[in-house]
Amino acid sequence: MVLALLLALLQADAKAAPSLAEPVAAVLARAEEARPDEVASFARELSGLGDVKHVLFEALGRGRVPRAGDDDDPRLNEVQSAVVLEAVRGLGRPALQALVADVLARPVSAERVRAALRVQGLFAAASDLRVIERLLSSARELGASGEVEPALEEALGALLARDERTVALLGGLWAGLDEGHASAVVRAIERTRTHASLRCAADLLGRRPALDASVLLAVGNLAELAASGEAELLAEEIQRYLTSRDTREAQAAVAALARLRLARTVPYLIELLVVEDKVLARAALGALRAIGGVSFPAAPNAWRSWYGTEETWWQARAPDLLAALEPGEEEPLGLAELMPVLRELSEHALHRDAISVQVADTLAHPDPAVRVYVCQVLQRLGSRAPLSALLLLLGDKAYAVRQAAHAALGAIVRADLPPDPRAWTHHLALQGIVVSE
Image 1 (tube, rainbow, N blue to C red):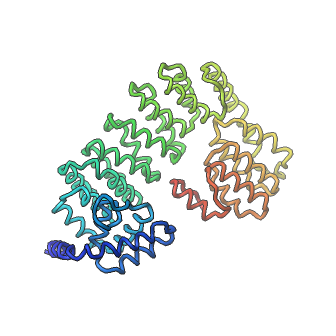
Image 2 (tube, rainbow, N blue to C red):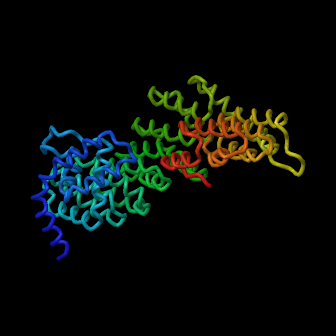
Image 3 (tube, rainbow, N blue to C red):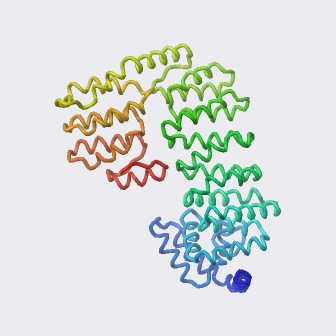
């Protein structure tokens, strides 16, 4: 009864909506080049115009500024879309649910379904996946499946970021979607960039073979979020695609292994240097260079010799070097004694993660000169494992240490940010990298 009344009110209100199109367009025109921190202010201004929900809902569906209501209207840019979404969010969950319910009752057009999907992204929880599934069914019945894919990707991306329980439920939804919508789900998982999204993407491998190439690409783009033990298991799953007859799958698998950077995958990649598929062979060469930190040509014997030498060094020599870094009961080693040890360790990138973790312990050394040199070694190794330790050094008492830590962070993460721990923590969180306090 309540829902029916809400729908009736919405339909009655729609008659007054066109008169608000021009004022809404005027606000959005001023918001076209607004800064991100001005979005909320413009959204409040839209809400102050009156009952604009139908105008905004239409704008969401069409992706255009609401003026004449035709295809000549200018498209919403990223900031304008954010303003509209923020204003719609302010309507509150009951009003948003009523808008979506109206579309479920009367889909009518792809624009309405797109708008409803984007609205779902504002408030939905994992338990609302069934509503998204019904909206997609409406799109199929309208022959508009392809037209709603971007809105689906946006809605699921927002839902995944807000409610991790969605990950456990997505597999069931994914299995029944058409290929285009299923691909949009994969893209949404990838853009979320959380450890849970990596697990979700990995779980989809093999469930729909026709989509394995796109799933592998998503796994590869998320691979850096894998924990060490998890990375080993993930590599085993990915390796079976290296010999796939589908060159897209093989190339995506190579790219994923390059991101995981595990030493034990090197022999499998060496074998690909001589395959007939030249694109795949070049991809394998690029992966070997990324994993090993060396630039040999595409000569399998050279790579095998190097790999054998590196593994022998890791087993026979590295343990003594790493043991020398451990603090003892006596005075810690000085810079002159540590430099040759650290220099040699920095020259062996194949096991960079394991090396970096132990080298990072030396950042607690009382001598600022040692801390500076250790930052430089970690920068050369390029592992993300010691990011938390480097972040702590942004507050070091010694200016030179703060500079060295800042330079190492920038090189490892490939970002140019001020030496502010909060800025770095926020930036890393956006990439799905959680650092300990």
